Each structure stands twice: as structure tokens, then as C-alpha cells.
Length: 548
Ligand SMILES: [Ca+2]
Ligand SMILES: [Ca+2]
Ligand SMILES: [Ca+2]
Ligand SMILES: [Fe+2]
Image 1: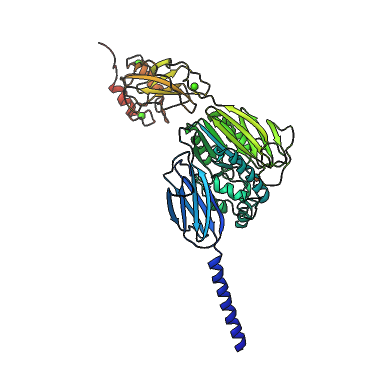
Image 2: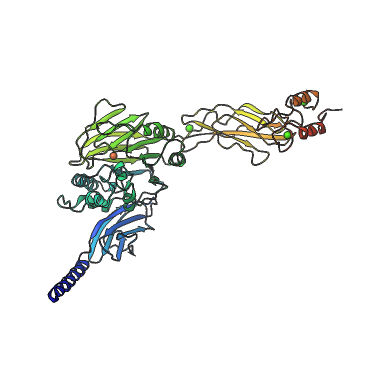
């Protein structure tokens, strides 16, 4: 009994000692440092994860003296994660940073996003890294070589999703953030992650196990909702979609997308999603929701490229001038593309690859690159033709000048204008405020709730639906007087002809704007019924307009 106790106590003591030794020596970096571009060109977010608690220091600067600034960080959440957004940086500038955790030092560098008015930019894209950590590491070796050959590619790396096989801790640890691959002489994936903000979307594999939970933990992008968001990068606007949250017409994501694309004034617009609308099958079929809901918006709002993956090869389809890229060969087991698929112009099977985009002013050059040797496996260019001309005619013209159609209504029609990017019209009541049409698609507009027997003046203008919204000059002004109260036929006198019309609507209900039961619902505001209240007003105005 005594012996047993001693043994147990010794064992417990020994275990405790081991634990202490373990705690003291085992501080290690589990992930990162890696980067997220938070959408502001004077900022960069640096993230890393340790395996135990430690206060860390992040220092940064224009060289490896890291002398511009520094900050201490403490972990957030419950899993030894650290995250710090450096602010006050100069756009388009390379910075070096150093993370110090205990005796461990991890270095990296990044380039801030270009100035908002920059006209040139380069960036990279890849996807479907998934369970092939070794393959992923090889692709990163190719990416690192591309940056070594042209430092201007140290900007950002888009990821089209399927980062891991399943959204579980072990997958993220052993797959995307795997630290054991050491393709000589360095760990290439770690170097890529420490050098480029990775701007990604969610793939279907990130919905496996815990849908998006661990994904969001390691990639806390500035989501608008669910996992969709957007950001500007120099002359580029990138919209990141979440295909595992509804995006059908009328859904929150769809409405956000319409607003996002229509309000961006950037010349270059790209969409990042996982499952492409047009690809070469052999793995997954085309995503018909992208075809139905996303493609029309690409046409309408001038999206030039949709980046996708899901199929593990490179492919390009061109539909109505929009390039649908499948860049899904950065790690996962290859699929074999089928030939003869609609709109597909290029497929490259069984080659680890990534994409390079090089924009100089109005010219974009795209290259798909074989990761192992830098060979160009596909290339195309897009010339951006900015819309600088307003619709025709300019100034805008009247098709039908404003004409009263009641004592409270004036209707008018603009000439149908033409523009390659579509036209919207704006009718302006210059007499009183609050009576403009707002931008509308139709050429006809009726101004309502006006005062009887009052002169109103109007102008109309048009604009195109390009991102620059070029406007025509206003038309000539045109004026019109509303009919006098009780004059239901507009001949200027309240007489028996009007009474006949009034009687025809007698006791009618459900009168509504703009007609108000032929104008017989006279009370102000009209109550929807032609009754004694209206008759009283009609009688009050009997023979108004008659000149004695
Ligand atoms: Ca135009
Ligand atoms: Ca009349
Ligand atoms: Ca009434
Ligand atoms: Fe996928």
C-alpha cells in the first residue's frame, strides 16, 4: 500500500514536471504568419496561431530593420490565435514584418494595395488546394518563382475555394497550413502565405463537417453577410460570392451583388466563386445558377472575368465576351476535362497551375501558368473600352411635351435615347421640389399629387448605365397647367359634360392614383370612393372657368 502510494505520487510529480517542461519549451507557431488584405490600401492584416499562450510582438518597416512601427498582440478567441491590422501604410509599397513569439521569430513581407487611382496592377489566382498539401506546396513554389522573377506580382493571391477536404481543424492544420513540406530549400506554401494576402471564397468542401465555421475562424474576411464580400484593389473591383448561401433573384446576396456591381466605378470587375457557370465537366457539371443569375449581371455591369474552380484542371469558357476561368489544379486530385463542352475554348488537364493577371491601363493580359516550370498554358487579353459618351440625343428631347391629364396630374414622354450600355431617364419638375421622377428605365412619366389650375415646368435628361453614368444635358423646358378642379374632360370649364363624366363614376370605389376614377374622386386627399363628399366639391366648382 505504502509503495503504491509513493509510486503514484512519483508518477504524478513526474507527469507534472514533464508538463512544465513541455509548456516551457514547446511554444510553436501552428499557422502563419499569413495575410488578409482588409480592403483598405493603407492597411494589412497579419495573422498567426501558436500552440500555447504567449504575448507576441509584430514589428514592420520598409526594410528588415522593421523600424516603422510595432505592436504587442495578445491572443483572441480560445485557440491561441493572433491578428493585427497594421494601419497608416503607404499604398503600393513593400513592407517587411517580424512576428516575435517568445524565442521564435517569423518573418514575412507584403506589398500594400495600389493607390485608388492607379491604372496598373498585377495579381495571382489559384484554387482547389484541398488535401494535396504536397501539390499545393509545389504550386506555391511556382508562385514564389513568379514573384522572384517579377516583384510586381507580390500583390495578392485569389483563392477560388476548396482550400481543404473538410472544414475541420485537422484538415486546416495538415492540408492548407501544413508546415511539414520542405521542397528544397524552403517551405514554399508557408512563404507564399507569408508574402501574399490570400483573398478567397468558400468552396463546397468548406461546407463539409462544420459549414464555414473553421473557414471563418482562419479567414475572417470583412464579410457583408454569410461568406460574401467585395473589395477594391487599384483599378480592380473584386466581388467574392458565397454559393452556399442563396443567390437567386430577390435573395439578399443577389440584391447585394446588383448593388455592388452597379455602384462600382472601377473599370475592371471580377467575380470570385467556386463552382463555375461554364467549365469542361469531367468532374462537376456546369453550375446553372451562375448561368441564370450571375451571367446576366456580368453582361449588364461589365464584369470581364469570373474566377472559379471546383473542377481540378485549367479551363476557359467565353460567353458573351465574359471569360469564365476554371483554375482548380492547385493540389486536389486531377479531373479530366471533356472535349466539346459549350463555350469552352481551352482546357489543360493534369497540370498543377495558377493564373497571372497583368493590367496596364486599358489592357489586361491573362496567363495560366504551369507551376512546375513557368510555362504559359493559356493566355488572352482584354481591352477595356471605357464608355465616355452620353446617350443620343444630347441634349435630351421631348417625344410628348408635358400635358395635363387631370387637375392633379401631368404626363410626359421623353424621346427614346440610344446608348451601347443602356439608358435611364430623369424628369425634373423645376417649379416645386419633391416632384422629380428619379432615374427610371421608362421614357414616360406622370407627375401626380399636383395642385389644380397651376403651371408647372419640366425638363428631362438621360444617362447611360455604364459605370461612368454619362449624362445628357437637360432638354428644353416645357410648361403645362393642371386642369381646374372639377374639370374632368380638360376643356377648361366645369359644366354638364363634366357632370356626365362624374355621374358615370358615381359610387365607384377603389379609385387610385393616378386616375382616381377619371378624376371624379375629387376630395383632397382622395379617399378612393366617388360619393357625396366629391359631389359637394364638384358643385362648389360648378361653372368654374366660364368667362362671363
Ligand atoms: Ca454611353
Ligand atoms: Ca369640362
Ligand atoms: Ca372621394
Ligand atoms: Fe469543389
